[in-house]
Structure formats: structure tokens, C-alpha cells
Image (cartoon, rainbow, N blue to C red; front, side, top):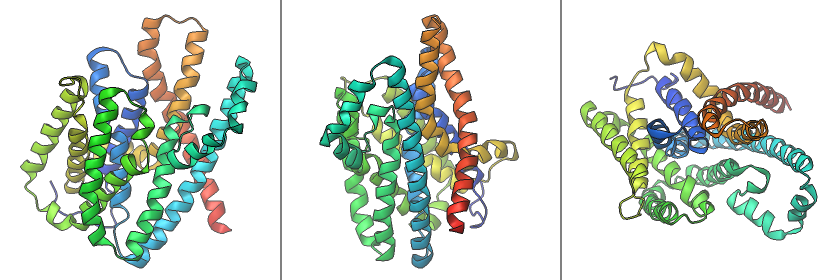
Length: 338
């Protein structure tokens, strides 16, 4: 392991794990069967947390420089969010028109609660956009971190981080143990801020963290990954205590990546993780819905669907994400010229 990485060097290992996390999220929503499904699901359940951890880490730095960068990310991700919402909305209109449910579906727009849920919780489930809460929470988080950086509120971060991590553990444990409404945990307060604050602290303490013994980091990775696998798939007394291990797993893998120079053979995967992981996440749920509709419409046997749907969802999400990545890059370039 290398203890120090060039600040200007792109960390290939982090980009690689971003790809793994994105694919893992797909396989949570379209899981394989049996032991393979249990393994891939265990990996995917900490994927979103890993993304937020990276985002928080990237918010640390020189005040003036980071304020500009955070505003730039806020603008870029705002554009991505709006375009993605339009894509999902168009799909929902077409889907409900085909199924003859458009009139019933469109009546939802008369309910003020729909807009409150969209704004506060990022709840776009009514148009198949369940995964889009991630972007709304991320945008709110960037606004918060802009003020944290601008006014140098590091002391507040030290106080807030353990509080928000405890909130995340308690709420996630409740939701997963009692099958409560998942929007209770998929939001800014529980889903985004705790991991972003933790990522920010890791960046602030980076020099000390990089001096940790290599064996200790590797051991923590192994223990937390094993603990996550066991607790995700085996609830003790119907209580899901996996959230503690999910946080430890995401954080230890991230620290491991900071301390490690990526092998050459993972560079192609790192490139995909760097450029496409966000778009894989954004498009995967839509891809799953389309593929499921097609497969069930063609009367494909349930057994075949159980194995073909996850694999097809990964392949088509990777392809569609590549297209989205190119399109959004061109859109961003045009906005920068304005």
C-alpha cells in the first residue's frame, strides 16, 4: 500500500468502487436468487452511503476554492436532476397511456401533498423515480456544505457527525426491522448528511488516517464486510442491526482506497466508475421496470426472469448510462459557455 497519493492524481480505486457500488445498487432492486443474490445484495446495500461519503470528502479544502467547486457541483447536479426528472416523467406518461391508467395517474397532480413530498423527501415514486431521492438529498447537502465551508464551521461538523450517524443507525434499524416506509430513511437527514459529514471528517483527518497500519485497515474491511453480509441476511430477533456494519464497510473501503494505488488492470473499470456511476444509478430503476414489463409481457418463465432480469438490468444500465454520460457532458459544456 502507498501511504501518500498525489493530490492531482485521480484515485482509481475509489472510482472502481463507485462502479461496484452502482452495480450493487442495481442488484438490490433486481436481485439474483440464492447465495449469489445474498452476496450481491449485501454489497449493494451500502452503495448509496459510499457515494455520499465520497461527496462529503470532496467538499473539504481551501475555503474560496471549495465554495466555487461546491456551487459548480450544485449547478451541474441540478441540471442532471431536472433532465432526469423529465425523462422519468415522459416514461410515466407513456406507461400510463399504454396501460390505460393515465387519467387516474394524472389526478395525483391535484394533491398538494404530492409536491410537498417531492420537495422535502425527493419522493418521485409515482413516476417510477424511486431512486431520485438521492439527487434531491445531494442538492440540499451541497447547499449545507457550502455554508459549512464558507463560514469555516468545522467545530459544528465535529459535533454534528456523531449525532447524525446515531440518527441514521436508529432510523435505518427501525425501517429495516419493521418494514416501515422507506422514505423515513431515504432523505437528507438520514440518508445523506451523516455519510457526507463522515466523508468530510475523513478528508479533514486524512494525514492521520493515512498513517494507520495497513493491517488494521484491511482487518476492519474484512470484519465489517463479513458483519454486513451476516446481519443483512440474518436478522437477530427480527432486528436488523446491519446499518452499523454498512457504515463501517463503506468507510473502511474508502480509507483502504485512499491508502492504495490502483492496479493497472482495474483502470478500464475505474474509468466507467468515474464517468458513468451516477448515471448507472439514475437510470437503473427505469431500466428494471422496462425489462420487467417486456419479460412478463412475453410470458417468460419466472425461473428465467429471476436470473435474466438482474443480468439484463446491469448490461442495459451500463449501456444507457454511457449514453447519458456523453449527453450530459455536452449539455454541461454548453452551459459553461453561456
